[in-house]
Image (cartoon, rainbow, N blue to C red; front, side):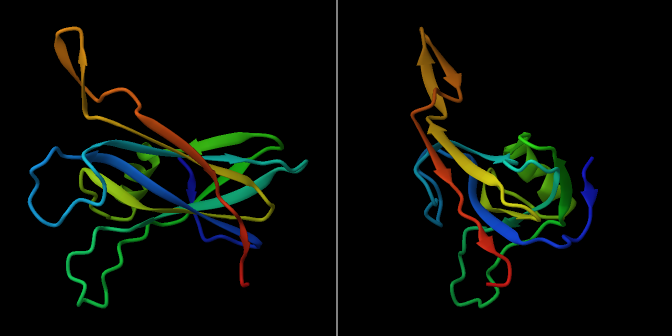
Length: 166
């Protein structure tokens, strides 16, 4: 289990957009879903390109679908920080299971579709890439309908760093 701590001496921060879960088939009651019906996953891949071991801190900032735009406090919950260590050239991945883990740790209730940001702070520069995939919830296999269809689309996106405090 990662250590729950406050980041220290971090220079770089990354904010990787995440969207995971199921959007039900139509018709759906309001509000209008944020995506078309289907199954969505995001995996955030983190690589340490340095010749030194580095610590990094990660948290989840939930972005629930707003339904009351007149409410000035429509932001979602934020999980605690989790500390991880990557040796030189090591990599790790954070996916929907991390969102569930972080949400539970932060007492954040997630619906069947969760979105927000995985926030990463590190002492050294990292390579961070988000991998997004989506597909239908059902697909026909032979004469049977199978749950969770095949991938219909996939996209990768490098997550840029920004210096903390700038």
